[in-house]
Image 1 (cartoon, one colour):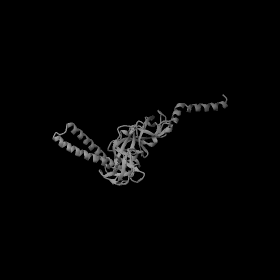
Image 2 (image 1 turned 90 degrees about the horizontal axis):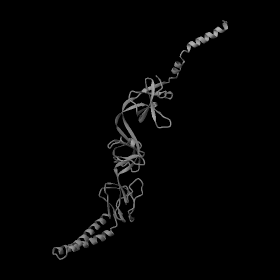
Image 3 (image 1 turned 180 degrees about the vertical axis):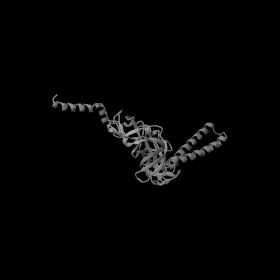
Image 4 (image 1 turned 45 degrees about the vertical axis):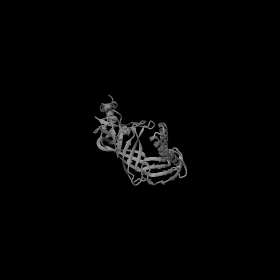
Length: 343
């Protein structure tokens, strides 16, 4: 054989010996290298935060059941009053007329009673006059009640809705967010005070009466107020799918005022939660679904999770168990069911 053909044939023979299993070498080269961390169970007190509004603990627009001229308002805006204090006096012309008529009827009835004892008048006449006196008594008492307005509870006069000399009519107030009832003055109980906020149905089962609440307001950004959940409304709005929650707290210094914006944080009781590094969580593009890759026997499995609370670089989640290994680096090269090389 010619010598010039021998050298190429030897080269081809040597190359054939080195590529005995090409498919195995391809798998080894393509296996993604990933780094993992362990999902850990730790005690944690979850904190839920909501925007809220400050309201008076009690509120009433004070007025009368009948129209009349406002003769005197005894208190100014900002004055504190006690339960039972006389707040407003209205014109009493009708009351004076009713009292005069009542006194005349009472005298007539006393004479008729004496005649009745002597059997000088019939039972019908006696009953008729007695009914007129009772009706006069009721009318006089009604007018007496509606010419004097008293405080139903202790509080602060926050607004004079009318002034002395004006004619009071029964018209609803038009101040959105507050009582829409008719009135001459607006009375509010500002200590304690009430915070209201809305809760979605997902969080509703977590909130109970008596849970501790922390409140922040923009007027005093460095100060935290403490209160407790007073009530959770047992129904949801059909429009917003939320329920109203009320927090009651002391307001001894009068710093919190109705209408203020508040941030309410509810601290839930301690519970054992599963934490994973934030870097382990991936969101499926185009959806709100989040997942992690759990590695078992060098195989990556995609597991859907729900975030509960973020704590620094760790996140409390549901959907996985403590002790499972999750991928924190190299996720971009991994698919569900991929074999991975863990470092």
